[in-house]
Length: 457
Image 1: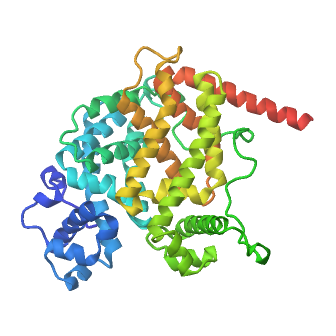
Image 2 (image 1 turned 30 degrees about the horizontal axis):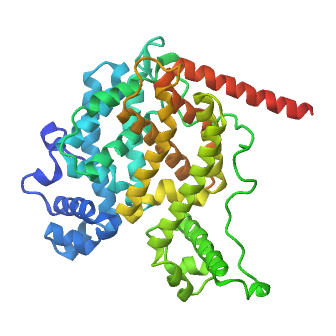
Image 3 (image 1 turned 90 degrees about the horizontal axis):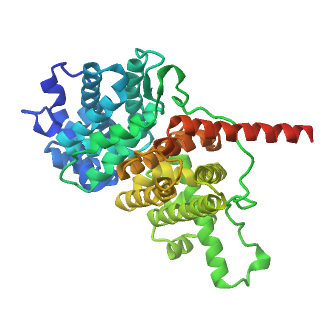
């Protein structure tokens, strides 16, 4: 993107409201409008030029292809949001930098819902280069916050939470409301500010700034003995197996093949032919069982969710007190994610790519996992100001953002090493950072003790 003038009036004016837009700006506006209406899949070059009112040759004078235009639109909108955040941080106390960034983000979404929706939701539906741009932009904003935190005295409190994950969660919380076209976003700043401030700890003793892997406990006893795997293809000796058994074998092979191809190439680039070839089925079999790759993808997402939820719920209800339940639940969840990385990629990285069905599945999944936090409101150790329902949503969105980042960064995610961080994110708003850290330290000490005992034995 070419640099914008520094004047606030130019930077902060929404794309669609600028006077006499250039052809390039009209194409960016067309991309935003088309993607918001029809999703990434529907925002092809033909649709964008029709929306922008320019010719196809003009499009290719400015952009190499659809994805180049899509990424440029993300970068342009973020540039304006970044300027707002920078100004908000500079105007306040450095210890409030994260709160200021979140307040500026909500204000941006309220002032310009179409651009905010494109930036915060539709960007997640794009190809890997679009996700790269989205993640890079959030990290740039997080750097502004971290630079401000460096000015804070060591004994002054600041939120002890990975800043990029908190900002990504804020985007996710806002995206859900922008998608539903809620008429107002009033009050969100205050509730989100209270949420991030519930993690406050002395600046000099921040523990959870980064996604740093810690000691991994032994395998959860509430997981299956063997991880979810694709079944083997029936050999000649099974030619007379019941038709239902054969169909289920084929169905599962197609689902696992879909997950693997999507992990390798992304949902948009994956083809039905590739899936059939990897699954070892004919086209007639594939289309008898699934309408197409979107249908197969949705089945993968549902199977992965059921597997994760079963493991998480079994571990959660086996423990006695609520903090222990959260620990055991996330111990099972993170190890399940590491067991089936292709399914994790489908659920946490690619789910938005199929449009409204995938988005709804993600939001339903977040609501389901929030159930495990509900007991925190009744826990005897909770402080007098429990998190709001919106904060509950933000907590789970932060968990999803962390797993998303970990899954994108590693083909074989090491999510189990982030168990302590995920537990802290969930517990601190209820019982405070100090009590949360003390509980986590007890658990980590138990892991060290168990390992020493194993070595001695």
